[in-house]
Image (cartoon, rainbow, N blue to C red; front, top):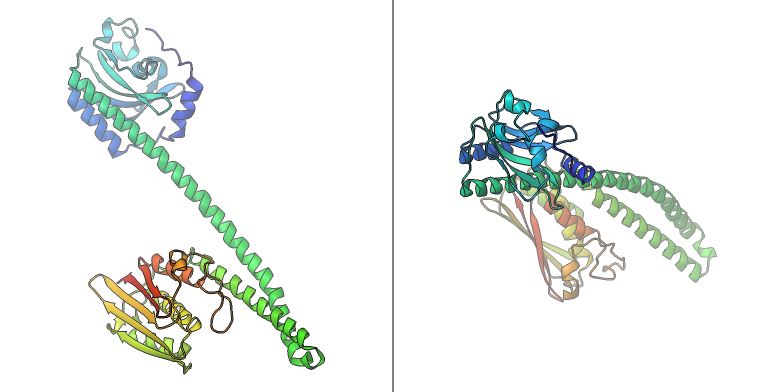
Length: 400
């Protein structure tokens, strides 16, 4: 018997093999099927997916053999990996100097025939083989050898898929950890920022209310600017927290909302404004979906329609139609419309289509990004149509 030498690139080969994290894993149907097919096509009693570790050959899948591994020094496959692009065929191991007194030949399972195709990765490193074996001498036809090579390529494709999946899972795990750290930092930073901001705003209110008569006009104007900036920064922090909180919020619970509840919520919040006219066309009595999410989206869109209206009378239409698979919801207004320059980026975080609303306050570009995120989280999609001077229509669909 000739003990197989280790390849010159053995350390590199072993690193590659272990990167697949496949050694000593449980059997998997896809690998088992490939070995079964190889056995059938080649007419051999045994078939193996053999991976050559440092001191052993370990079988990811096997047909006709009870053991899960053998010593590397007895492995036919340890010879085969020396020529990555060549199929090793041993018609009769009993007549071959390399194997004639091998324990696997003279003892159980009494191997005579062997054919092994190296499993080669993209760097040309042999990880092991897909092989067929028998206790009787054999020869394989060219079609059988071609089929065995094709099956070996499929084994390698499965291994590459496995490694890609593992890499993706590790990347996702790292991202989730970083997101948790970022979220924790955001909450701490927001708390530490909002406290002094609230103090600045409160002190400014006291100065304006109690001491404005002692200040010149420029002083009062500066205090108002400080108060406005503090409130805007506080609003930005709150909006960002709400936006990123959606990543960890549970949107899976379905909580139906009735038509009367939906309209009353809108009217309670905005109905006191005499310059706003609502037109409701809500078809179903109950919207059987994520009620709180739907309400949050509607209130955001309606609030935007009012804030950015340039009409003396703002008309807002709210329509909900029910279909077999879900709901189509429309919020349309007769407001200022959105310049086409901003259409492509309207739903992006921090993007605003107007320098300020009708009250002179600057938007933070978080509201519509939050709307899209909410709709997507419950399996819906959203789009809009707008024309300057004629208004904007938001249309979104959500599942039942």
